[in-house]
Length: 97
Image: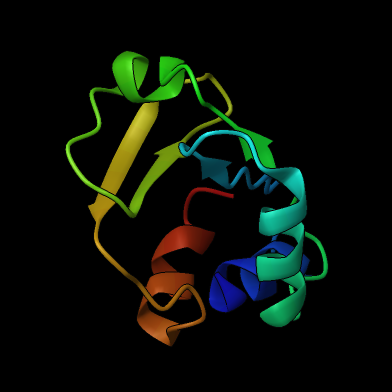
């Protein structure tokens, strides 16, 4: 989460939007405390307690990162943890900005 928040704050990307989706039962206070404990500054908190997002994107595990282009098309999917501030990842992602 911290590296995702750092990516979202990065000045390298002009058109980047990041949505962190919580698929647990809605508990805004618990989630806010979790974000605060990780010093998350920009990421918003979105809840999908009905699992609509899970169904639409056919998620099989968490964490899952889905990258969508300006046309609304999925162009990549990452299963598991990733360092969003890794130079190789950033250079790759800059091709899509």
